[in-house]
Image 1: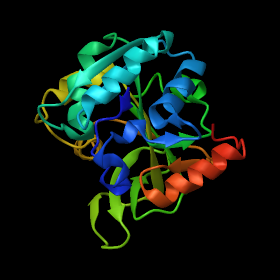
Image 2: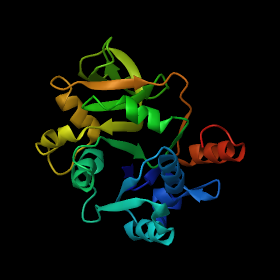
Image 3: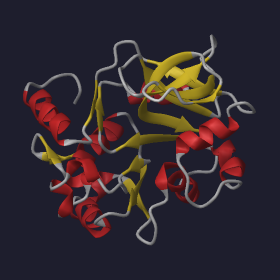
Amino acid sequence: MIFAAGLGTRLKPLTDKMPKALVPVGGHPLLWHVVMRLKAAGFERIVVNVHHFAQQIVDYVEQNNRFGLDIRISDETAMLLETGGGIKKALPLFEPDSPVLIHNVDILSNVNLAAFYESAQNNPATLLVSERTTKRYLQFDDDMRLTGWKNVETGEVKGREGRSLAFSGIHVVSPALSAYFNMMPERFGIIDFYLKWCSELTFKGYQKTDLELIDVGKLDTLALAEKVVAEHASLI
């Protein structure tokens, strides 16, 4: 699943006329980069959720013949459901017994998506994490089980503190979680979901020590992404 429904407010004024998913990097929209990575990793069915300028994304997918894949649209035009609600709505579009890889549309990385997906088959959820600098960190115990969350600027902690690692925006969710998703409201964040159930369910962190990642969510990182693509770095 590709998260492409966001408003992209940090990329204004570009997103005043287009969705973040269609903002170009290296001559291709962000959505193209993620679809190509997923296709190369062997994924055949992709669900793209849409809200902001939704029709532009639908038209782009159709104009490219769905990239030769089974690409489905999860329509959130009536209401933006956030990351957790977006997964909850989209789950019926997937095979009921296959784990779902979730990928933010604005993430470019050197992650081997096929290997990561394969490693996550036996967990309710697996979150790709690293020691990247950020303001908000997930917390893990010695067995890399999720225990909580911490904002290092405010000192706010949810759950139990442990080892601090940064979430990449790439994770794998088991269909066995559908019953837990159904206990949630229509609109909620996926991190809130993980924190709510992490004491009951084993959500694991998958640390990539050599992670190269660009969050192309704001104008300065967009310029960096252009530079990386132009230099043919390992992110693409």
